Length: 415
Image 1 (cartoon, rainbow, N blue to C red):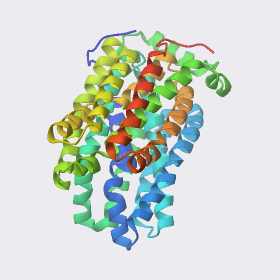
Image 2: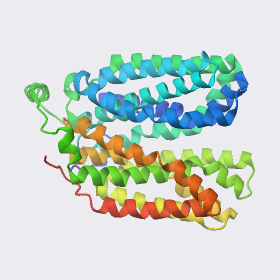
Image 3: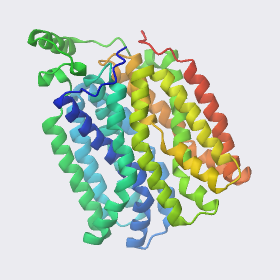
């Protein structure tokens, strides 16, 4: 494995990383961070019940799983460039629907479509593109690209507030949708499925024009030995899906309840929201550090360290609330990086030609595990005495995730 931590990706390589970062930004903005205000804005604009809208957002999010299945199949035929551009275009139109519809049903449809498209342009197209461009330095490349997620957490809600002030609630939805459509055009014009199509080489290596052409022929003629059945029968696929699925569940459990837990501990809503921004800024550092560790010591070791780090974060949420414990929890929660570790591990197990097939299966299983997050939290909050009890369950799951991760063989697998 290439353990170089130099950021010499080349001009075209950096362009791919920045565009991938935009995909991560709009994924987080439309699927996760934005819901903090989208639900309230929509409810207030149309006189609808907030809790009813929020309840509809949960089943709507399940359409993201269908999106993974659909876009994984389509990318085999069209490639990451076309899938990314199409999904971004349709994602922008879908987000703009919030500014057109006015009912709970309309909100549900828009949210379902937004989730469906987001898993196309980010968790399928952008990740496949990075795997093709940086097969041995994907950890570092993803460390930069996934900063888009943290940037969204820090700036998207303030940007949305400015748009609301300029054009009203419905206008703000249309403005964000229009920006996504512009990004779709940029994606279509500038992205290439492989570096060879730009006359470059994977990992910004040096190949002759003849070697570049040979690579292109290999890509065109490649026949994957992996079928759905063979992927589902593979032990490493399941270990990866389960361990990282648990890691994602733990991350969502911590981040989604950060503000409610801090306010329950005695902080004001304003201070808690400010700490959310602090965590997002820390996440920019965490994203790069995780990518650097991935490249330096390997994805498996970096993932185990991530699991231990987040176990400490969970435990700070289990102890009685006090200022020190809450500040520590913000620090440990902020410095994460699961967004780049999962695709990096898939890239270690499968070559860049088979990456998209494996990604589809592993993403679906991990998303199903993630879907239990709020049920687990609700059970703990109601039956086990509040946040301490809820996070005690999450801590046990975290330990299971670490043990499963330790069992992964971080090397190419064969059917």
